[in-house]
Length: 390
Image (cartoon, rainbow, N blue to C red):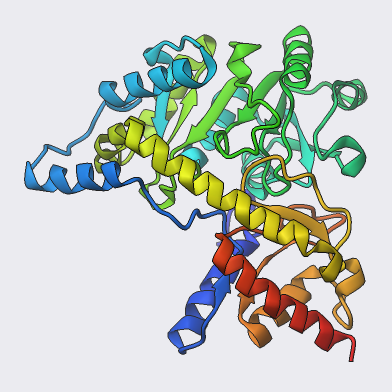
């Protein structure tokens, strides 16, 4: 017997790093972890209180509708009116087990084995790995500083001319670069996809976490045949609650519902009930305070770039990452993976190697955390880099 060939995808390096962080902390080491996309503030107070009340009230927490409870879907619809002045039918909102569940269901519903699906490089590795495990052909679009790490319609057109595409995955703000697609650019990509019958998949889980100089645009403002994916994990800081959602195009509703019913029955029910409280005015205020802290952390890093000697820094429009090249700081290390490993073992700072996001070009790191942790980590990183020059 042997494992399925579908399982032959690279591991998500950040999870291995988190495991090592836990081991070092168990040994009594103090480690500053800046490797995971996990907001430090946690869930809003109203959400926490609602979760406590669920236990006190003995709220029934059995199976829900496959797409989740109606009250929460109505709140999400109201959220789209609040943020985008966009009307969304609650019947086209599917709650999922994190945004990861939405990607899996969306890819299964939209693409067949062998379909070509384009995405950016560098980019979030799970897109590539989920698609590959489903037998899709992943078409990587090399997007660097010249393209602001985002694809152009011309780039997609060239990939489509080589062999027809079935899908295009975009993210704004993107992981790991933090770059955004301006509304006119997103409209152009959406129009191209619609004209060429290519399914657009828009990752919008970092919406709300921006520097406000570029407007965040929902793909459904431009194309109702797009799959839109979002989550409670980032803006609301609810990573471990494992609750996301998808705006499902009308032609995929039946497939999405059937797949969800077979795969998960329904999303985590306590999280669904508690998440209703994410849409209170107080929850928005707390989430916005977290966004302000991310901006402070970003400024601390960007102000230190010259001292760090990092290059090719992505314009961090949003999210909570700084993506930069460290080729000039590798010293005796052959790549960013061994550099990050040495930094963690010797100085107790966990960063994610760029090879997680760009298998071909690598040599970069992704950094995310609150301002105090970032400031403390930078002192250690500078000390580490100085030691490599001795």
